[in-house]
Length: 306
Image 1 (cartoon, helix red, strand yellow):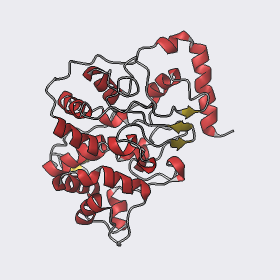
Image 2 (cartoon, helix red, strand yellow; image 1 turned 90 degrees about the vertical axis):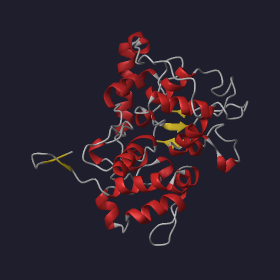
Image 3 (cartoon, one colour; image 1 turned 135 degrees about the vertical axis):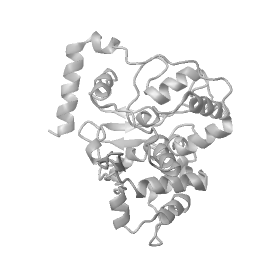
Image 4 (cartoon, one colour; image 1 turned 45 degrees about the horizontal axis):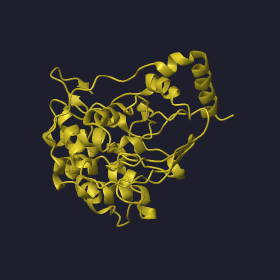
């Protein structure tokens, strides 16, 4: 029996033992009022950086923007990014700004149900109330599409959402994107993008048998992405060995062209076309600066520390 299935059955057993206790266990945190004066243009920029358009648009089938994405096939089943248009029945048109904040930063539906970690909410937990207000303003401009996205096709026991509360307790860890003293403004901006909203580690970090990122292998690549795809290591050492520089990496985030003249494959190609190509040149360069140089910060006492 595969390891992930053994663990899944163990989780299912815990749910049965816990019964209503797990189902009723509240995992949400209070959401402060979100400012009503969000800037839609800045929100649209953040949505591009966050990959919302790429993930929630089934462009291969000619789907409308943000009306639902292509299925993401995993060992646990298929996950379909939902409709994020302003349609009140099939999208998020009936949500409040606070519902939106809870979903983006906490990974919880308006009703308090946990979302599957295929939605990279752990990377968005750092977003400020102002960021959320701007994003919300941008999403409010999306034309409604009155069509439901197909439902998830998740195998038992992973279709039992109550089990996600146990998963969150064991594995959920928000990304640290706070500025690091002693680093440049560009480096810290790149950190905010790479470790947070651009969620590079969602693909470029391997996962354990229960689908949680292996933090000890951060950005070291993954051979087990949905659909049998792989993502290479993007640590500074790995990038240097592959011949990357700050200049070539920032250019690739705009063009999709690698240093050897080849182009990114379909997965990363879509990330570029729908996301990083739309960023300001300074932000692409900041991402490259951060990814190419993660040397420890030298403390005042002369020792190295992370």
